[in-house]
Length: 477
Image (cartoon, rainbow, N blue to C red; front, top):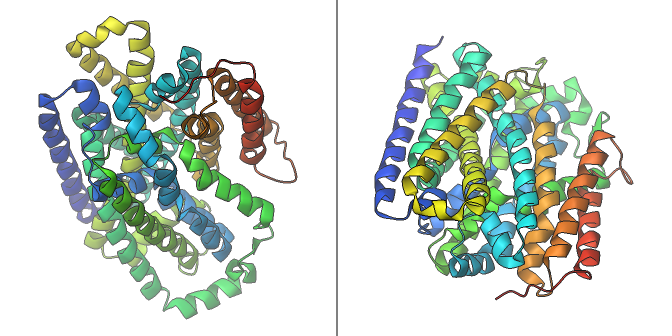
């Protein structure tokens, strides 16, 4: 166990707990529901940018993405840059309309919005089921990423690493709620940018410069320096289009990203966030994926590609600096999973429990207890789910992303922008989109080699339009 690396990480974790307790004290004066789940709608532009970008950038971007770039070469870096407009697109499409409706109906969760818009509990129940199922898989990815990171860098057993991470993120999330999540996301976003810059510089130096690293990659496999990928994974039109839909356009349908559009302070904050968040995503995507590719010139024979970033941290940085940088991927992972824990808790408590027992909203003490139990129960189940990890995280993460997008994308977009959209159309879309995505994924069926998300979204859109003809209109009010 490397004590020089552990001390900076411990200092960072203590700081995170301090932020959680600060957020806990801040929320004592307001409504528990509003404060715990959306932080009282008080985010500035900078905070909104950081929490939106940091929530999106998780284990897949700091562990799985660089691992894929390590294996598939510079083509994967080009592919990763497709994600750069994600924050701009998500906040631009949802921002103002979402915030206005949320304030009008006092909505604090994504399903609150769906209920207010479609006036139908079946829509909420279907969306809740899909959200919890997909979030569980996505959170398992984050736990696995954290376990691999701590295992490789600190030299502790994988199982112990997962348990330590679970205890940390579970405790500070339920203590501080949404306000703690967005404050820590802001800090973690800054840590990610600094850490990415330091690691990239260390890799370039250890490789003897970019030119020398490129020559080494050419010697390993000339296709690693090609923009078209390697024979094992060619980056053709269908793959790149699928990837863009999955990790950029489809993000509009991610509930833990969309809920940020309810919580900002004013229009100026929204506009600032769109610019700052886009810059942050560009820096992190380029820096981390290039680090994965160039890292192959330093450690060419890794059997598990996802270990490239943890391995490089240990090899190219001094122990104390590596310990400081360790906070960066940990921050990326924590900033994703805390948001999903909050969203999962809000789905079970606010959207399902209070829907069955609406009078329970007056018993704030009971809601607090149930929220705590829900968060900690999720954490325990995730520990068990993370104990047998796959070799590459990115495919599991993309699988769960697609499930959420097939469920929520058209229901959100058409609900906001199509006045005639109704609950029957939404139900048709959720059932058709999600079931087609699951079936095509399970049976490995593809249409013209597109990823399952592309035909699933087309099917979901057609189903919405057809179903809409059979239902009563629910106009935006």
